Structures are given as structure tokens and as C-alpha cells.
Image (cartoon, rainbow over all chains, first blue to last red; front, side):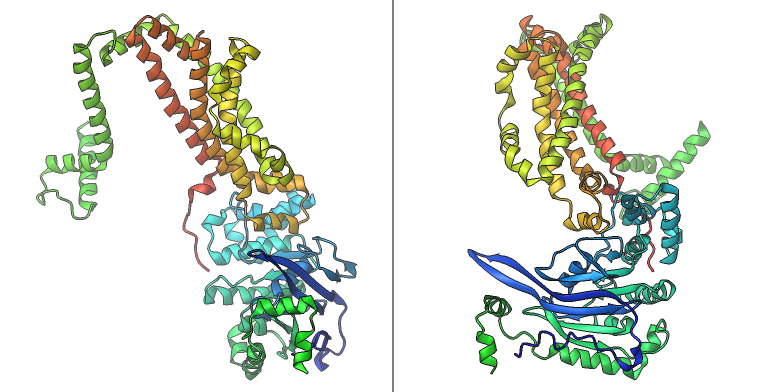
Length: 303
Length: 295
């Protein structure tokens, strides 16, 4: 396997985005290592290897790939929940050193506080930020209305369906008015109809707020439907394999119509093929250890 | 009266009919239907009540035939109960026991919750004092009472001290378990909004731990009652435990049973009370699911 560290990571400025907007998120050669103890042996795992990526202002980016490719790790590093071993991330020109109010994260399983109502859950971030009560109440109501939950503000999470919980999570992330919205497989656990409803909702919110969005998904349909660019990652070690432009013009909020287009079908097929070539037939852990040890065995074997 | 009776019958009949495969006679004879409905609805309570009646009756019959030095019987206990209530001994003793019980319990709860939170949250604290908590929980605290008598004398303080050491460990251990059970992702929600350590503790970890804390408080109240009786046995002055010891020395078996019954009721009542509070402060735990509509 050729070492294509940077080959795919150069942002491909397609012809239709000839005038690139300001880079909102810049991921610069980010690597992440961690240690895994298997029995008595310690293994050195390289979760991300020199990943670079730029996200333009107002762009929607999907991170996808086989499990273990480090897509969630990358998102968490952008969020500031995890530290990169080397390399750096900057958002709006500011280097990321931890979490910040310029980024909002939607969690995979909503992670609402069961002791708070929907409204109080949305208020949480503002509360921590120190926004006075009447103000944060007003903002929370507004954001809940934005995600279509104006009628369920006083319900507790146990009284909300899965889709409604995710909406509350989305409203909570938006409450602090972040520059960048990060979403970690936000709709993965929902049924197909609910998921589709929320996908349309995300597109609508994107149109209304113009937020930059980076989301992780294993659902290629979702990636192609929502994103302007789909970043395909591959495991062992986690890296960007290819970046696909999604040349769908205009509004995509009619998801059914978009699904019917040839562009959608072709691109989805192309990503799928790219995803499945070099599917991990080799033992992943061993491979990672070899690479991390810098034995160079693979590289020489490839020649 | 008649009308109310009539409604009741109708309601009972409806309930009887609603039960599938009811053994009730199909004809609409009112009396048996009502009987069946009432019995069915309160079946388990009736069994409990019947069991209690049988116990009391057997005890009464057997107790009356035995030497009053060794045994007593319910009516004798009731008579003594009435006397001790009338002359104030019982209420004074009860109050003497309740004061240190509540004070000790609240002190143990306040300290136990704080210690439990710290031990659960910080590995350093756990490493420093975790050993003593495990030891304190597993060892019989009664062993320390002679030492406590030396330190605190025979009065109020020693009772409080015994209640505290009996109660604090289950509270600490439950709280610690609760803190450790807080999902990491919930804490990460706090992190994602740049919450400081104090805000994390107050707004996420503490509320998430409340159900565990309540379990600890419920376990603790039972041990607090045990603690107060043991302390009073040793000091033998005042309180319900003191009454038991005094009655035992007088060979007054009926008087001995009066504080025992009171303690039993007290233990059950307080545990119920804490259980009720649990539902009050952590209602989300009870799985109150209204009709969550789907979108």
C-alpha cells in the first residue's frame, strides 16, 4: 500500500467553488496515537496519521469510512474533547486547545440530562456560559422552536421519542450560537423515516443559519444527501483516503427528489466502491503496530 | 348511602367483568359479583391482614398459657403500651432516641454525600481514603462502642457518634458508586460547553448521582435505628433501647415488647419515608413515560 499521506488531503477546489470562502476549520497534519493493553502486551495504535483538511465557511462536510478509520476521533479532536498527538486544528483562525463556544457538538445518543426538561437541557450551555436567566430562557425557546419542538419544551427526556431527543441535542448545540456545528453520527440510532425528517431539518437549519457543519456518518446516503464534500477515511492508520465533491446544485431539502437524481446514485456508487476496495482482509491491529513501530516492512513489501 | 352503595356495586362489577377469564358466575347476581371483585382487587392485602390476625391470635392463645416471665401476649403488650403512653414514659423515651437519631443521621448524610462524591470523582482521594471506607463498611462498628464511651461519656454525644459511624459508610459507598456510574458522555456534554469542575459536579455529577444517594440514605436509615438501639443498650440511660434494658432487668416481658414494636414501626416508617422522598427528588428515575409522540 503506497504511503499516500497527503495525496488525498489536499483540498480539492472544484470549479464550482472557484472562489473559496474563508477557511472556517483547518486541520493540519493531525495524528493521534494511543496505547492499548491486550493481555500483557501493550500495543501502540495510530488512530489518525497526519490528517489534513480544510472546511470552508458555511460548508457541510461528511466524514465517513469503515469503523476504526478515526472519523469520530477526528471530530472529537476538532471539538477539543481529545488532544492530537501531533499537528493542530484551528477554527476561525484560532488554534483549538480545548472545547470552546465557537463549536457545538451533537452527540451520537443525544446525551440529554434526564432530570431536566427539554427547555432546561437546551439552557444548559448558556447556564454554564453565564448568560442571565431571562436571556437564556428566551434563546432556549427560540432554538427549540427552530428544531420544531416548540410544543414539547416542558417534557423530560423520558417523555421524548428518539428523534425528538436528537432535536433537543441539536437545539442545545445551537444555543451558544457556535461558528461550527459538529455532529457525531447524530441520526445513526434512528429509524429510517425519522432520520430522513431530521436530515431535511439539518438542511433547513443550515439554510437559515449558514453554519459550518462537520458530521460523522457511516451512512453513505446521508453523506451524499447532506454534504458539499464527503471525506472518505480509511483505517490502519486512520487517514483521509479521498475527498468527493458532491455536485448537487441548489436546494436539497427535497431529499426524495435528490435521491432520484443520477448524480446521487453515481456518486454514492463511486464512494461505495472506493470504500470497499482494500477492505480490511489483513489483521488490523498487527498492521497498525507494524506501522507505528516504523518497521517499514510494509512500505518495502509494497515495492 | 343507598346510592353510593349502588355506584360502588356497579364499579366493582365492571372491574370484575373486565378481568379476563374471571371465575365469577355469569349471571348478574349482585352480591357474589361484588364479593369477588373486592376480594380480587385486594387479594394480597387480605392475605397479609389474615396472616397478621392468625399470628396475633395464636400468640395470644399460646402466650396466655406460658409463664409470664418468659412470654407475653398481644393484649398485655397493648395494655402496657397504653399505660406507658399515658404516663409519658414512652414518648419521653421515643424523643430521647429520635433526637440523636436524626442529628446523627443528618450529619452522616451531609458528610457521607460530600465524601462519596469526592472519593468517586477523584482517584487521588480514592487512593488516600478508599481503604478506610471499605474497612469501615465491612467491620462491625459495635466493636468501637466501648472506645466511644471513653471518649464521649454516656450521654447524648455518644449516641450521635454511634449513629454517624453506623450510617455514614453505606451513604458514602452508594454515593461513590453513583458517581462512578455517571456516563462519561454526560460529563463530556459539560466539557463541550467548557464547564468548570465545580459546575460539572453541581450540574451534572450530583444530579446524576441523586438516585444512588437516595439508595444510600434508605440503607442508612435502617442502620441508624440499629445504631441508636445499640448505643442505648450500652449506655442504658433513656431512649427506647434504655426501656428495653430496664424492662428486661425487671423481667417485665410485656414492657419489653412495647419499645420493640415502636422500633419496628419506626424502622419501617422511616424507610418508607425515605423511599417516598426518593420518588419525589428523582422522579425521572421512576420511568414516568407520558405518551412520547413520534415524529
